[in-house]
Structures are given as C-alpha cells and as structure tokens.
Length: 272
Length: 252
Image (cartoon, rainbow over all chains, first blue to last red; front, top):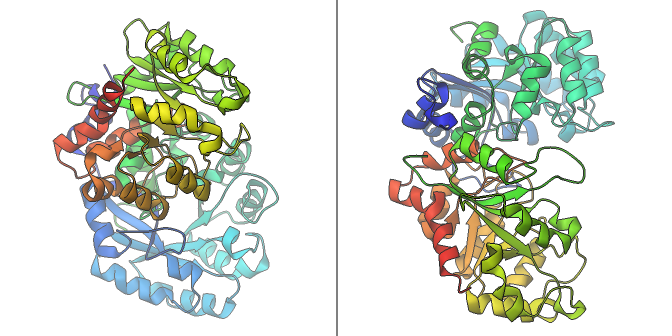
C-alpha cells in the first residue's frame, strides 16, 4: 500500500480530492513578472485561481516589484489584495537602500490592515546584511507589534542572510514572529539553532523544501513540526507540487496538518 | 498506484561518493517506489558522473536484484576514439541481456566536447535503433545543449532538468518546438500548472514523469501531475505510458 492509499490519511485525501481536507495557508509568495523567468500565472487572478484549485485558503506574498523596483510602492499591493480579500495578504517589502520609503510605508501599516501582515526582507539581493542598522526601524516596528517578519535565507556562510546572521536577529528581537524563508536551506545546524535559541518566536518556512528527499523529516526531528510553516514562492512553484512534497513525507498526519495549517492559526489566530 | 501507472524516467541507484540520500540496491529502491506507488523506473548508477566505466557494469549488476522486472537500466557513453566502450553493434547488442534500455552522457564531468566528432558513431547507431538518450549531464549549459541538438537532430532524447528549481521555459520551449524527438522530464519543473502548458502546446506525448530520486522524493511530482489540469488520458501518458512506449520502440 502506498502513502496515497492509507485509509483516511491526509495524503489519501489529497490524492482523491486534490486538497488535504482542511484549508492550507501559504506564507511565502510573490506576484508579478520577474526578469529571470517566464511566468504564465504571475498576476493576482491567475494565482488565486491556482490557490483555489489546491485548497489553499490564503497566500501571504510580497510583490516582486515591491522588492526589486523601488519606484513601485507597497500601497499598490494593498489595492491588489482588496480585489481578493478572502485569499490574499501581503508583507511590506523592505528595501534597506530607501529608509524614507520604509518609514512612509510603515506609517500606513494600520490603514492597510487586514490586508497587510508583516514585513519582508530580501537581504541577499539588496546586498545588506539582515543585522545592518538600515533594517532597524522596520524590525523594531515589527517587534513592537509582534508582526511576522519573512526573510529570504539560505545556507552557506558569510553572506547577507546566512544562519549566523539570522541567529543574531532572533537573539535581538523577541516579539516579532520570524519566518525563515527557505529554512536556511542546507544549513541544518543553524536551522536548528535559530529555532531553539530564540525566545520561541522563530519558525522555519519551507519554500523550496517540499520534494527534497528527507528534508522535512529532518526538520521535524530537529525542531518539531510545530515550528514549520508552509510556503511555495508562488508563482515560482506549483501548490500541488509543494503540498505533495509535504503530504508524501514520512511524517505523521498531525505533523502534516501542523505544517499546512495549524501552526499559522496558532500564530495569527483564526481571523487574519 | 491502482488508478495510475507511474514509470519514473529519472532515478538513480547506488551509494553516492559524498553521502546523502540513496538506495543502495534494487530492494531499497523498490521499497521507496512502493511507498509512493511508482511501478517502474529507468535507473542510472548514482556515481555515473565520476565512476565511468565501472558504473555501466554496476547498474547491470544491481538490476539483477530486481526479480519483479520493474527496473530498466541506463548506460553511459564516451567518445569512441579511446575505445573505452565496445563498438556500437556489440554495445547495443548487449543491452537486452543486461536489461539496459537507454543511454546517457556527461560531457562536463567526463571532459569532452559532445559533438559529431566524439560521439557520432555511437549516437548515429542510437538514433537508428531509436534508443532513448537521457540529457541529464549538461548541467545548465544551454549553449552546449543547443549545439548538441543541432548536431544530432534525429535523436530520441529526454531532457532531464538538472539546473535548479527555476522553470527553464525560455530554454526548453525552443527545443521542444524545433526537435520532434526531444522530450521533457518533469522532476524539478515546479512551474504552477506548467506541465499542462507544455503538454497543451507541444503534445502530452513529449512530457515524461520523473522523480530525480534520491535527491527528491517520488511523491511531490506525482500529485503535481495528477492535478496538473490535464485530462486523465494525458496524465496517464505522462505518468508512465510515454516512457513505456519509448522503451518499447527501441530496436534492441
């Protein structure tokens, strides 16, 4: 009997119905064109249609332009979310090279609720380490309010969002909710440390991980499924592929449910 | 799977030099395939890039452990001028008894230019016999792959993604458009509903399910394909029938 045939399992439900039987929360998405790739489904309507097919109730995203193109402002993203109020939430894209824009945008944060969730940092591309003072205003803002902070992270050492840098961040801020995008991919030592040596406000976000053989199993062993958050980088990666990677992993159904749904509800509540 | 026949076109067996995930032998690989409901697999030796020509003998040896006839092997070719492999008639003539169904090449690691001068004799024989050629060794070197396809346009080949997880449409689509024998394998192609887009534009018979096991698990791509948005008939082609047909079409 294969994983897909286990009676009344999450995987079986996915195989038969195309969704796990409960709403999925995808906490790492993007939107819009990107120079390095062809997207057929990079705009909101197509993305939301894809989410619905896979049973993903909400996507939290940052528009590509809000990260790569300084003239494109986060206010535009809020307007996109208003068109899909049940499905889309956004992180304020933080570009450390434009401190005045950061202040202007965060000044509108309360006005943008409930569509806005937190902030997103992309240090590896902006080439400013996550510990740099240019992020402090935004990080203090998030910390005071207990907001999610999604970072692009990756393994290896000596770069802008590596494991040691992320550890410094969680040691400094104890109230913001850190989602370590891509789970510091490949650096198991620091993936474990950023969770265990935090004040309990640190989570590994799984974009690019589901499908990697044994990796979700390893994270469950190192930090527990309660510390894992689901994400896809949509429109980069397919929701069915990523959900398939989670539900076909050799972990319990409780762990699968934690990753795809329960953990986010514990962090953000039922209404967000 | 009872409802869908999966034939994995991108799978490796053996113990990797630098550790990591692996299936050491046929029993271990078949157990992994059973966990996910994959019926058959086209199998390379995991160290083929660094252990040629030993790897060809190894994959044949490891396949002897599959008593259910679920695994088909892949052998690696090299330039014929150094006589590291038998002459084409003898080489392809030994495929059946060793349960080999396809060939592959690693020009980057094996340090040669993949062109007519080096591989013409073997690849002309492969094209004549319609033996599938896995293109898993170009490591994202698109201009080399493009030159290769220009030199060998008649090949029956399967491109196997090996350059990260970002969809390669800008490079893949021109090859699908221009070479009718060029097929695309899905492991690592995580583009939302992209499998359906490729199948609808170039034909479902040009797309093949693959896992890239043991780096990836089998299951993620299975769910992606099942819910790709294609008809059940097209999904079945991609899941397994296309590869089965290609292997049956080889004159060995």
